[in-house]
Structures are given as structure tokens and as C-alpha cells.
Image 1 (cartoon, one colour):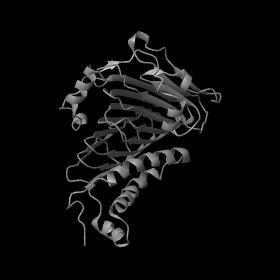
Image 2 (tube, rainbow, N blue to C red):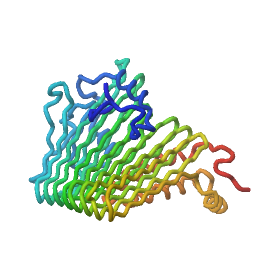
Image 3 (tube, one colour):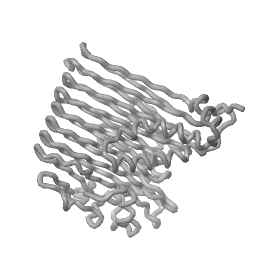
Image 4 (cartoon, rainbow, N blue to C red):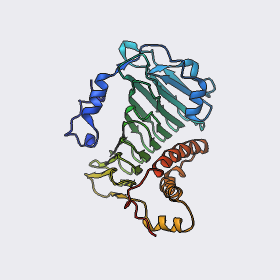
Length: 396
């Protein structure tokens, strides 16, 4: 079984999989089995409400199956549709398709929720496949929130393979949020594929908090002149987690703009990685592309890897990239502690400020509050971890 449905099975020679524990991912997928039962009774409307922290239009899938009783797409306006393919047609997984017709603008967030629940009676891990297609017509506008949540199992865990395909017509505008809040024992392999027409724009924020092993791959193809992509990402990695974020933005047309901002916090024995690539194809003049990766390492046993990469095959372009890996600022920590703020609280304040640079820029208030709460909770766990005597340096 492949870890991806797109192209050949990757190997360690593939730079995009350089930091991922490929052998372990394949082993876990090969040991897992797809669910063929009913929606577990443990998944209730209250649980879904807690996961998304909001009401409104939503499609819910449990263990890869559409849960119609937990979904609500009846209040969508004309020109906005949520459809689900035939379940397991030909042995595949159902596909959620969100379509916004030409000229239709819908500001209320549409939520697609994927829940993975391990079977207490199984001895093998459960495999859940999540498939979503988002299509916006010319001059259309939409806001979509994807949430992936795997529950903790008593004996087994879950493996999720998620693929989201986004197609934007000319001048379409999409605001897209991707939240991965799986249980700590879960495995998550995600792919987001974005194809943009002329003068279209996408603003995407991805949040990676859960999973023992989690990979978040994003590929953006700027196919029409004047297209724009703004990508932001937050990853909080602790314990023995391994989080891998891989971003590729392919500038295939002139006058396109892209911006990448990714922040990671790594603690304990965690390992966080970011690989970002900007490709400027021949003839893509007037390209304006920027990339930034910033990482906080809170423990001497933690590791953060950052790999920015530019491939420029055209003239008359402006491209920048930068990466930083460091620990909490000793002077700032000393200043806060000298004002009577306890060590744990001081660490938490500095981590919140580091991540708040991205969460504060989220435009939708309800989504911003929910993401900020999830990130703050994960960051508090990182801030309370016992530190090595010299990490950070404490002053008298």
C-alpha cells in the first residue's frame, strides 16, 4: 500500500519525504484496516460541536463514511452546494465536493469534519481515507474549514490519509483553514493540492497539533496570470511526535504572488520539520514570492529542521526566503521573571507571542478564537515541560 494516491510510492531519495519516517508510515498503513461498520455511537452531535466550536453548514465523515445525521448543509444559499459521492463505490472512499457557482459570495464558514474512531474490538489500527474537492467558479468567494480529529483508542490507534483538491477559476477567492487535532497515538498523512486561475487568490492557514506522526503537504499551482497564494502554518510538536510540513508553490504564469509564513514550536523529544520550495517557471516574469520559516526549540532533546528552496528559471522576479531556529530569548525571559512572573508563565507568554503573530492575522473571528484556543492549549503543554538546567539559561 502506498502512503499517497498521487504518483509513485516515495522513497527516502525523494527530497520532499526527506524528514518523514517513511518506513514507519508505510508499516503502519500496511498494518491498518479500513472500517466497514456503522458510525460509532461515541460520535455525537455534542462531540462534533466541541471539535469545530461552532454551528453552521457542515459535512461530517466518521471513519471515512459520510455521517448524514451529523451533517447540516440545508441552509446553504442558492449557488453553494455540498455533495457526497456514493459511499465506497468501487471500493473507494466517499468524496465530499463543495461547489460555489460563478459570482456567488458566501462568507459563513463551511466546515468539513473528518473523525477517526478506533474500534475497541479490533487488534489492528483503523485506516480512514478523507477525500475533499473544493471548486469555486469565476468571481466566487467562500470560506472552508477542514478539521481532522482522531480519537484515542484503548488498544489500537488510527491512520488517516487525507487528500483535498482545490480548483479556483479566474478571480475566485478562497479562505481555507486546515486543523489537524488527532490523538497523540494517531498517524496522519495529508495532501492539499491547489490549482489557481487568473487573478484568483487563496489564503490558507494550517494547524498541526496532534498525531504521533503527522505529515502536511501543500502543493500550489499558480496557473493564471495575477494569481496570489498566502499560506500560514503553525505546528506544536512535543513528546516523541514527528511533524513534517512540506510546501511547494509553482509559479507557472506571470505576475503571480505568493507568501509563506510557518512557525513551529518543538519540545521534549519532538522533531519538527519544514521544507518549502518556490518554483518560478520559464516565462513567469513579474513573480513576487516570499518564504519564512521560524522555529522555537524548547528542549536540548528536541529538533527542528528547516529547508527553504528556490528554483528560479525566469528573469525579472523577486524571491526571498529565510529560516531561523532558536530558543526562547534569555533576556526577555529574565525581564519577565524579574517582574515576579513565574518561569512557566513567562515561557508561556513568550510562546504565545511567537505564535500569536500568525493567529492574530486570521480574519474570521470565530475561527480565530477557536484556533487560538487550540494552539494556546498545546503551547501551554510545551511551556510546562521541565527544562534542562542550561535550557534556557536562568539568571540569579
